[in-house]
Image 1 (cartoon, rainbow, N blue to C red):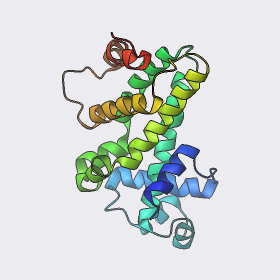
Image 2 (spheres, rainbow, N blue to C red):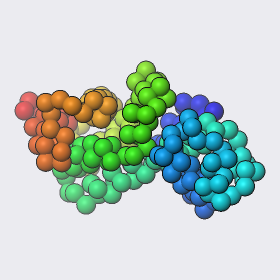
Image 3 (tube, helix red, strand yellow):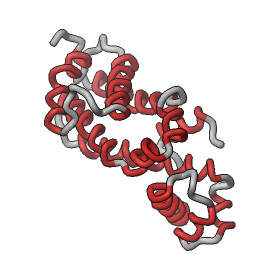
Image 4 (cartoon, helix red, strand yellow):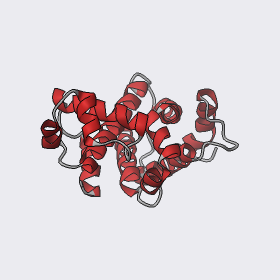
Length: 209
């Protein structure tokens, strides 16, 4: 199984380049995981779903844990890519943060695999999203802190704001809302944007609201 440090590096660097046969395996595994859950999915199921032989599967993913890790890493990279695309055209850091917050919550709501794991296989999902969530939160913090540093270099964010601390606050808040969406804070797109403007932008600006 890949170590937590290797997982984090893979997420932050984008991982290996896509390869058609590997993508075919990961696509088949994702479909099976969404239908049956990772625990009930076998390597034989993935071989049948992909139309490839067991030997081909095992050459690329020696264990089922490696396959699960591969699927989760690719889904995480897809999330970061979708988030980047959603905010790329916005001209200011404030607009990107507001839209990024709303998009993050929306993508999380629509992520079938995460929903499946959360409600059908909580014994697999919950440890890695709570007490073992350090690498996941570190990856998200690194992603956001990097963009905050870029904004500082361009003069678009206050120089006296610590990007790591701000990113940690925003990531932990978002993580909590994703895990427990029921509450007073509205999580639809309009509500999330309004919340971000009122309560999150002052954190980035380092000024009182």
